Image (cartoon, rainbow, N blue to C red; front, side, top):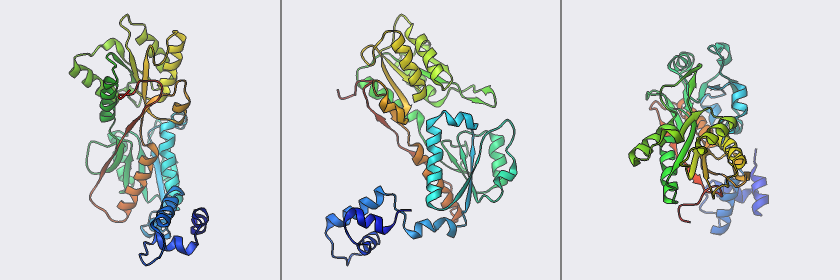
Length: 337
């Protein structure tokens, strides 16, 4: 836990000065520059004032159950969902809230795992039966990275369809004219969804509106490096080869890079590549990967805050949509290049 003394040491002032600045004491005679330095340093060091640290206990939120839609081995290979969970856990640690993880299995979780939990954060998509089960066991529920088709629950997520359209519009502005897409079909309890995954759905809508949809360059597999590799080889084997490829996540982009290199093509000279998630390895790929940054950790942190508000008595439910932005790197041209 960051202390006033540690902030004071960094800024070069006394602990008393730090305390008075962070409590917005207008009678304190310090320069605007010093005041700003104290506030910015406290933010950078993730300082939590005592009243914030005690908020969870005051509102009776001592334990949160994280109910995941993935199995442990599936989460392990998905950096996006690891980051989301870490966002939840780091916020809970700062607030001294205990967490218990409940991963997906072939059957409903053991209800005893939720015993003593003051609230639930459900990570990812849950079907109607799972939502009903959660509702039976706790009244304080927040969905992270998924919004159920009802307004009776809090939720926080990114708008993936909007993010896809923004990326497509930006790539078009950068001069790309034949843009391919490699994604996946959502599978729930072993059954493939009849509705395309949201990024794929947005791509198909955009392409049809623009009059450029070609099913040969819009393919679905699984959300893995291997699938990205095979789908990319299939797409780039077409006679009318695309000049840009969007993969639905960065893991698939890693596989796409391998396929492109094996086919003797260059990124971005022969084929540009853009993706989603902005996992840590994206900036170290060769060339660095252009990708849509999805605020995974912030989704997790916001879910905790929503649960705190519920525990504090808020009745009106909220849906939060966090903004996305493209991190332009060497795998594509930029729109203003």
